[in-house]
Length: 387
Image 1 (tube, one colour):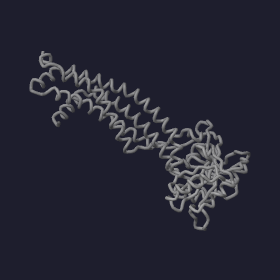
Image 2: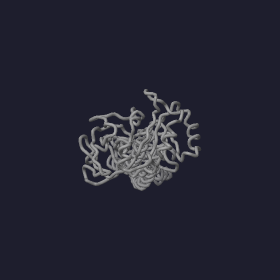
Image 3: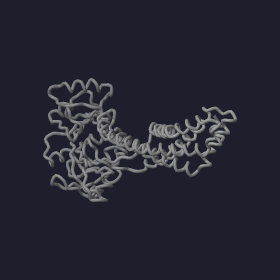
Image 4: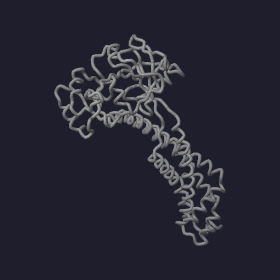
């Protein structure tokens, strides 16, 4: 095996130009393949990390997002009395009623408008997300005022959302007094305001959702069964991590389908390129193949040697493509979240699974591109080779 490897490597080095061109083709295909998977994983991770396993979110039954949900005040009052809810330091339930609305804001770089989530929060909202959120500039808004907090992604990308700036919506001016960073979560792409002020401004009679923390996470199933069968309630309970994971499914599926379609098209070109390269190698080395056969090398040895050349090219190209795609993790992109129809900023995310899939994909391309030329080389007769 070591002899075959060194033989294949020497032949690749002797044909540097064709090896480099074929490797570049493999590299670009793997780059596209890994990039799409990283984009999908980055979106999924952003939304899943938004939630907490200890928290439960309540939305209207059948609603796919908070934007479409409505939880009546009397229903929120009933939910707040549930014994499974954890208590805060003041002895009160860690329970928050929240409102989610969409507004249209122009972007700083292009003036192009886009939907932005405005979340009405209560004091407990910050306590429930204290591990995810930190104020990076300014201060907390005063309760009952028109002061707001802007997520760092919104502050950087949209006009009027920076510190000491103001936004105008619902016929009122809202002053930005603080910027918060929620890391790589969806909260960084939201603006937070006082829930009661927001309900008054938008003339809403119902909340969008209710969020609370469990005393014991193992009690979730029992709680869910009880409140969802309560005739006074028309709601659905989900773990917060499950809710946000569901939010990512539509967009992630779309990205994966689009990415796979593009990758298949590009990979056909890379496979054909590898095949042409290997057929040319066979044609240029007929005398060499004949010498090897006359020295006693079997047909399987010839097949293995040429197939290994193709696999080496694809492996080198695949590793190069994966390395290039890894640099995408330093970039942040924004897109429309199909579930909420709002702006969502997230980063590419490279995982071990994606890395292994990319390398495996490059090896498959190398195998498909090299197997036919390798079979042709192995089936040629010694007499014809030595003429």
